[in-house]
Length: 230
Image 1 (tube, rainbow, N blue to C red):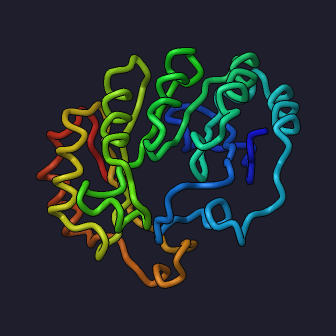
Image 2 (image 1 turned 180 degrees about the vertical axis):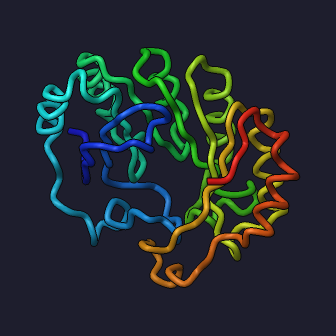
Image 3 (image 1 turned 45 degrees about the vertical axis):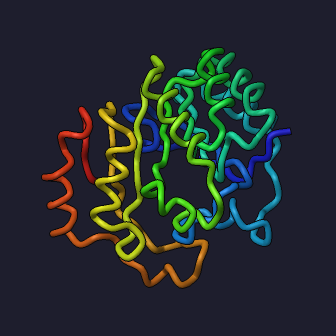
């Protein structure tokens, strides 16, 4: 059974241009200290699971009122039953957006092959030589690179994105991250917000200054068809 740790019935911002519900899967293979969903990552903070059937029943009542469903986490691709769950949502004629950290390229290939996703958003956590520091764990970078290529070469709409924590990600690091995705369709840099973090010490951390953000925007806006800071 897919592990669902949270559910938001309505969002105007999570799926570009669509009204959507958001499903939060429980569990993650990363331990990014700035993570703003610690209750989905730290087992000590896990809440009771929400039944998939409860959500499917709700979605049945929202046909014609919601356009889409966004699946985020945690890391959704850790859920072995994710394809079957997405298939059930698809049968109700909803678009599906999937957020991923890119560590399960095999799952991404399957979801794309069977038309179970309509929009993919992959987090680029840091430059390749610093990935383990940013994520708090060892990372198979070959899988990250493979996921990037799978997404770029698919017919699925997509975005890459990175969260900017001042002392954790440098300007040089961001340049390296941009190089790792090549000429992508979309790449967004996200300002870090410290209202909730996995590591309590990061509640005092900051995003890059406005001056640094503008410098980055000027340097990197040619790296993607749609490049911006949000």
